[in-house]
Image 1: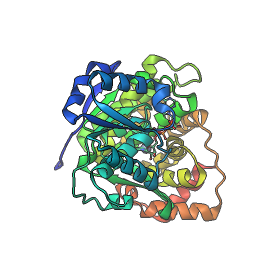
Image 2 (image 1 turned 180 degrees about the vertical axis):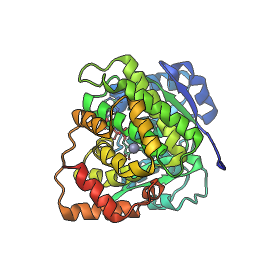
Image 3 (image 1 turned 90 degrees about the vertical axis):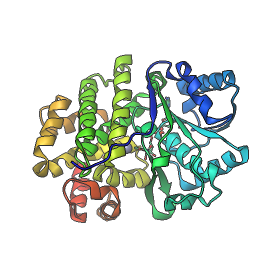
Image 4 (image 1 turned 180 degrees about the horizontal axis):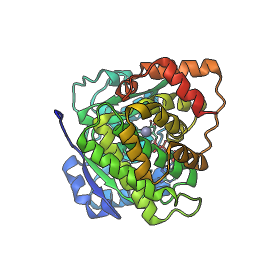
Length: 366
Ligand code: NAP
Ligand code: ZN
C-alpha cells in the first residue's frame, strides 16, 4: 500500500458555481486568455457567464475560439502564439475535453516560446500559466486531470502530455452547461466517463483511494443508464453524469487509462469516431478479455451498473451507440500495433500482446 495521493485542483461543483465563486479568479492576474471551440462556449451559456464575471472583476480578456475537436499540436501552437502576444496572465479553458486539453498545452506555450512538439519533452523553462477549467461536456474529466491529449499527425495517433503543473488551478463544474449538448454527444461523452472509471478501477496502478471513487462513478452511471433516452435526459441525470465524470477524472489522474483508450485513439484518428464512442465500442470485449484476472472487480462493476452480465452491459451499450465499423484486417493489425506500443497499454491489469489487441478489436466491431 505504498503510494501517493496528490490533489491539485480546487473544484467548485454545482449550479452557478462560477458566479458564486468568481472572487477566486482574482488571484491569477488581470489578463485572461479564453480558449474554446467554435460553438460550445456560447451554446452552453458559459461564454456569457465568464464575460459577465470578468467584466465585474475588471479582468481584461482575449478569446481564441479555434480549438478543433481532438486538437492537434499545430492547433495549440497557434493558440499558444496568440496567448503570448496577448501577454496572458492565466488561461481559461471552456468546452469539452478538446478545449480543456488545448488550454493546458496553450498554458505551457503562453509561458514558453518553444516549438509545440517540444511540449512532449516536459522540461519547460517557465512554469505554465495558471489554468482555469470550465467543462461543458460530462465526459473527459479534463477539468481535474493533468493530461492534455493532442493529435499527432506525424505519428498518425493521439498522444498525451502530462505533468503536475498541468492540473487546472480551479474548476467550475456546473451541470447546467451540459443542457445544450445534443443527445448523441451526451451519450458518447458519458460513456467516456464510464470508461475512465472502469479502466482506472482495473488499471495496474489502481489504489484503494481511486477504487472508492471509481466505484461511486460506476454506480452513478448505473443509476443513469435507463434514463439515457432521447429527449428525456433530466437535470438530475445531467448532474449525476457531470459528477461521475469529475470523479472518474480524479481516478485516471492517479491510475492512467488502459487499452480501451489506447485502441480507441486509432478509431478516432483513422475513422473519425468521437472519443467516447470509440471507447464504448471496445468496452464489452475489454471486460471479457480481463475477466479471468479481475473476476471480483468485474463482477462488482456489473453489480454497480445494475446489469446482469458483461453481455447484458454490451447490449445496453449497443442500444446507445452504433458499434459497427468497417475495418480491414490490415487496418486492425496496424491499430493493434500502435496500441500495443502506447503508454496506456502498460497499465492494463493483464499483460497484453499485439495478438490480444487484434482479437479485442476484431470482436468489438462485429
Ligand atoms: P469535444 O471534442 O470537446 O466536443 C465534442 C463536440 O461537442 C464539439 O463539437 C463541441 O463543440 C460540442 N460541445 C461541447 N460542449 C457543448 C455544449 N455544452 N453544447 C453543445 N455542444 C457542445 O468532446 P469531449 O468528448 O468532451 O472531448 C474529447 C477530447 O478530450 C479528446 O481529444 C480526448 O482525447 C480528450 N480527453 C482528455 C482526457 C483528459 O484527461 N485530459 C480524458 C479523456 C479524453 P465545439 O466545436 O465548440 O468545441
Ligand atoms: Zn477518455
